[in-house]
Length: 279
Image 1 (cartoon, rainbow, N blue to C red):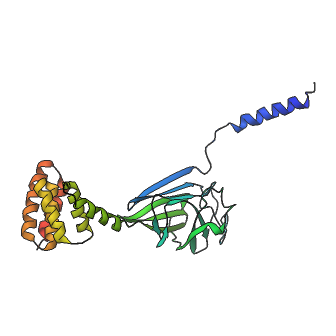
Image 2 (cartoon, rainbow, N blue to C red; image 1 turned 180 degrees about the horizontal axis):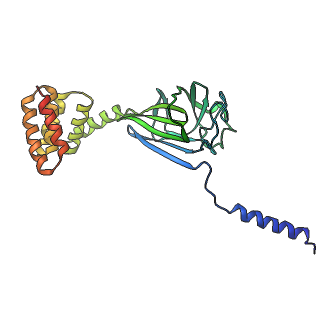
Image 3 (tube, helix red, strand yellow; image 1 turned 90 degrees about the horizontal axis):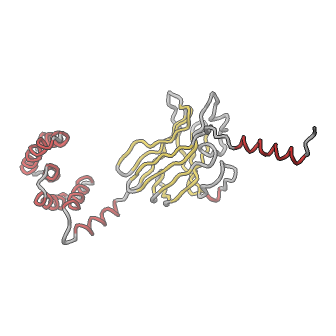
């Protein structure tokens, strides 16, 4: 018995539809990695292809040719705030991250179009910055494309891309000093300024090695308001930097006594180190 052509077409359509609904693991699974840098956040959204016995750089990824820096949709670089990327200012936003590998270098391209599929619709006119980086050759191979953050400071980090035996580090920095100093000036000038604000201001001056006399004024007010082991230690370390070891040691001993009662051994060690070094 012969089925009408329309019936055959409907059966074939139903069969194909059934297969289309099968869920399978992605060959290049999606991944997201984020890191706070300064007062902002850097996020990389990408698909992670694996080697599976293949040679990538110089073969599947020809030298000198544009690469989507992953698989599937273009890898996205998302900045919550303006950042310095290898010294070049990039505004907050969502960007496409392309790459061009050679045998010795890899150039990252931050492109304004973050929505293309692969590199097929790449437009050079949308490039924001290009960052050439020297390739490092680690001893071990990385099977799956990996982005991660390393080499942290309070205001910077390296975005590391590694795959096969290729590793590159992209320096990213967000220096909020100007904004922090404006906040300190505004908040410490208030008549009802809280001890926590003064403590944060004093710590920031200490960490950035600014006016220690002003930092000590704030630390004095903090200790007057809250006699805790962490407030005594704050004033002790500032006093030590000004050369007032008498005050520094007295505060450090008081901090140690209170820290022992609280069981905070980190502060005990910090104070002991301060006493030993203060001369």
